[in-house]
Image: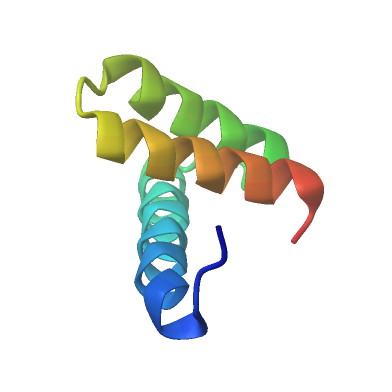
Length: 69
């Protein structure tokens, strides 16, 4: 299955928003900002989320950070 850029852009926008929210939360708490701390923050959100779509987006954000993209 192949997706067009118009179909995938909203997904990546939401993934970027999730990462941005995590950055703001870490900064607000005065924690060190790193890929590891962002990944940990997102993994905590993943563990708390019951919504399948949200879990997929959070997992994509974690994978994007770990892959360095």
